[in-house]
Length: 127
Image (cartoon, rainbow, N blue to C red; front, side, top):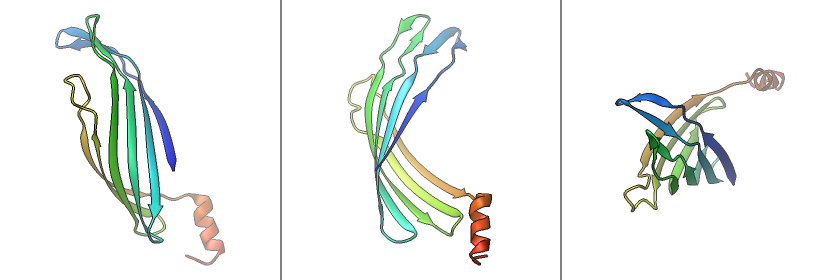
């Protein structure tokens, strides 16, 4: 189980089609329930909550968000340093016109290393 809180901060846009657009901070919490199936393959059920982020144009306030999203992510460790993930997430309570409507598909390929880990491998003879 993993929880990841985040805050989105927005600056003022003084040239939004001739108007001023301001957006309040938006809070986000992502949750992931992950299961390893093999040494290299895993999957996760994902949940997200978005709250806040009310926008105003020339002082006329809009509605703040209060939306939930669910998704599924698959990951595969190609080797010790290279990982591939594929995921999909969509909002679920998006019936009202002012609700956030989002569906997203994500593919990422990440290469990572750290000198301490690489040095440890050399000491163990894993080069």
